[in-house]
Image 1 (cartoon, rainbow over the protein chains, first blue to last red):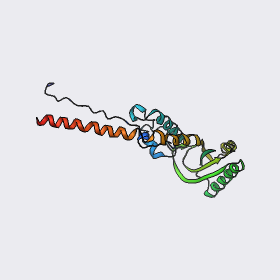
Image 2: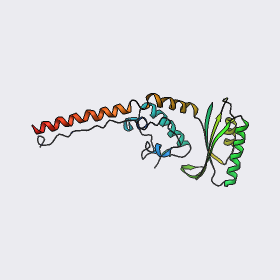
Image 3: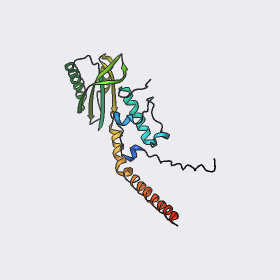
Image 4: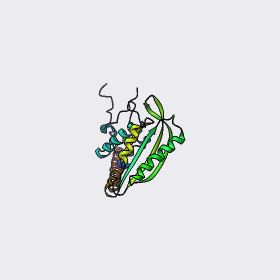
Length: 79
Length: 138
């Protein structure tokens, strides 16, 4: 069984920071559509290890999300 | 020069005319404080992502403010908003520094690392495929 089973080849796609790739330098808190890509179901901020965002952009993304939350453009939580 | 963005949410039960006069009042305060209003947008009625004071909707107003000498009366405007029950939320953000930083990043490191990286990736994959094919043929 174990011998005949073909070995699976794992492809780990290299994650690239979306903002670096799209050359978005200023992350606007008003751009709800953009921010929504980084807030999954529970409305938590998507961590860097999953999204692949670079540190600089993650920091400004975090700021933008928090501003948008204050203005009720984005929910704090969903349940 | 400093630029600011000012967003506030007005109670949806307030009539549009009153919202306009409210905007007028704040604009007057801002220009009296020595700064200019560069943009004014009325986003109108929008659904709130979560209820604020048991309201599910709000009227959004956006004001872009620029001040040459860095003096503004925004602190007073904020104070007035805090006292006004009709204002559900407000947010003042200083944007000139962030925009300047973004503009600096664009010519320096924006284009360079992404395009060669992509080219290298494609280049590296192609020879590998060739090797596999030739190996199978033999």
